Length: 385
Image (cartoon, rainbow, N blue to C red):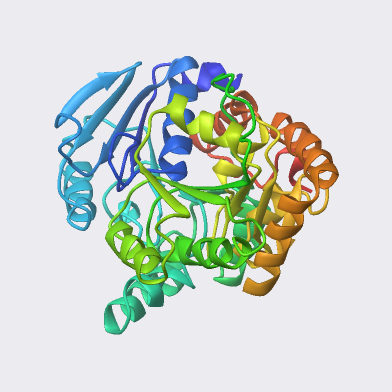
């Protein structure tokens, strides 16, 4: 029996705290919906359960995927558990529990097989986002309770770095498949590269993205490049704090806060930017790296972020650094050396074509079909090793 035969007519339910229409949605939600659409294309019925928000109705069907939205950022976990346990999503053949720090505890709510999807481990984020007791409890759930609860479940990690971290939490590596992100096609703008030095930051504005590091770098580098501009794309609950941070440091003329933008504007910025700055504390993969790479825009990121070690080939498609000072110096080197930008830009373009959504969807569908057959998968994408 082929994977397509196994998936046809089967109901797969994803439980996730957000969807892409949520104002706080990001790369993890893009990945989730791409995988859902891949299953629909192979004949499966797919439901995504996520938090309610003002940007979308409580229920709708979009491109064959049924969305059910209930609860808030935190109560969505209890709502999802109840909906699954009480059969409100209908008969379910397989559950994908999207673990963004906290699981939905679906293993205790259903007898259907469960696949746990993890973008990255949140060891570093818990004390930053939830200092004190709340963060300690959250980390205890993620690194002790969840691995025990899902001890017999199949895992999917989006990078080798995430797979390796899961293994340190006690998850059997033989139950972890690696399915990388893909890259969306370029949305052409024709604007070309900016005439003045320009750095971009793209992503959710939350503390662990460390956008402050990019602001500090811009302040240092504008002494060398007075017309430098840092464009910050995205929104989030930390946005007001970043505005305050930039204002207090006299960076208002250097920093351009774009807010939420449509796809065309986002790709205009990728195309105009001389380099992308990704100062994030942790990334499962770094979807923005490939998006920028499609425009020959190389990325500077922290090596310790994890997934960046796979989405970026150091000194070939971008630069990986270890310290904040190195981050500043790497951005300065790219701004000041057109030949280096061109070489890394060519590498970024080549790298962006190595990872496609079509391949990711096929790999994810293979994992789901195998689990439905009662099998476990530990194979990785061809580029995973």
